[in-house]
Length: 228
Image (tube, rainbow, N blue to C red; front, side, top):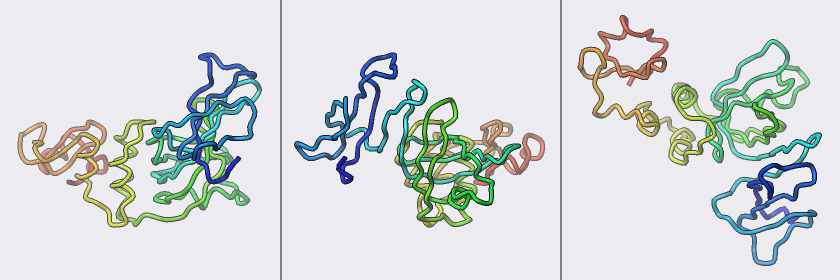
């Protein structure tokens, strides 16, 4: 395959794929006459699908492999050596993925999946939880972006790409939290405290309500809020 051609696979050519189902492939940015040497592929141009992805099969089940840029929002340690990683990807929005054996000292993934890392990741969508295969960090956001990362983790919908949100989160100079709240539909500009009607000072992640400084101790834990 021409390494300069980005390609993405949208779906198999039938609604219920089997092991022998032909793939439906969409090439992006390919010049005329560029074709893949892979067997059983149909190609066409579709500018909407800009992510490298390919359908494969594992024991007869369809598997989607995708490569994209991602910002690591947070990670959780499980009882074994695996890690669950919260990512905000440029092409698929927020996802929760599993990094197998990432806690082992021999793992090559761990250093590239630290919070606020900006990495190129490759994951396989085989079951309910995507599995991270590769990650390569090429940048890191400042520590001032930690709250913005939490806002995206708590409020952004999964599997919905958002170019505006990606641009805000990826800025080297962290925008104020109210900018990300506005991008997610929680614009505090004309908001008021839910309980007293005063000017809001906090936004509660748990209740998704705006609160003033006086009402926060009675209605929510400060640790569960973002200061506006």
